[in-house]
Image (cartoon, rainbow, N blue to C red):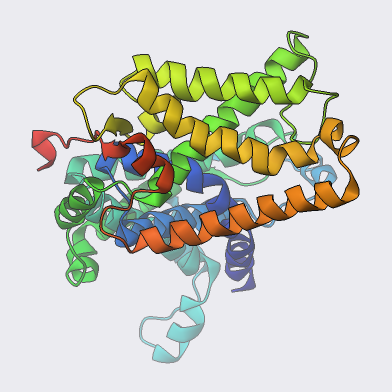
Length: 384
């Protein structure tokens, strides 16, 4: 039993890290595919990922010592169909007319291993039918392909990490795993009858997708500034600019400052003017900026909006941390500027918290620039 519990314990430790890494691309995918986030969908998909992680570790762990694997001899492939039946008949201690042998016999490896191979893929069949809405044929195919992936991983010694296979490639495992997927498909309604259907989840999410949440906007913000940081590093490495990464307290004089000002102007003002109010981040989560007082989004709208959002922030937060200004401000004036920046940041935080519960959800720079975010997501007719 410990051989099965150990991989699951490792999966429990690794899953939070994996979930954190996948959160950003997973959220982007949901906004693009469904127009919004749905709590139950997140639960279903994250449990599916956790299941796959557990299944993968169960067929890999525990990992042997490479030196021990190098000394292994014998065939790494078993291609005789239904050999597990022969092994059972040859090694079982069960005597059919003696019930006292049943319990001991059922705990033998010749019984547990085939049962484990079936149980391993049953959840896969359930997920494929319930959430992914696969047909019976597709469920059989993908269950077989999952099993084939497991067997090839073992046969190749985890793709070359080990000198050769440390576990047997068994054709019976392919059949038993596939059978597990079929069983999962058959019993899926028993487990999912109390849960809303995939269609119902999609419908709820489509309705939510019409409203642009702060999380959606924050996601676009993170993507945009990540791309700009990467661009800055590339240009810095190519010596096009005098630094490799964007730092609010690095550089000399105005070297960092002019780059920040130029980035904001080009990326958040000029590009959206000709890209229908979108940046790359906004396009990924399917939102755009629109004017609330005219049909067309103008350069003036974008300049006022982003000047208030970024240039004021630059003046209040970034300038006091730039060495050029630190060396030239008196201690009293420096502390005053820092205090103003802190108060402004705190007030902006309170402003956001209040607007979370407001009706229009527009922040001050949006109201003053007469702009707002709208969703560009439109579900396909086949999804409705």
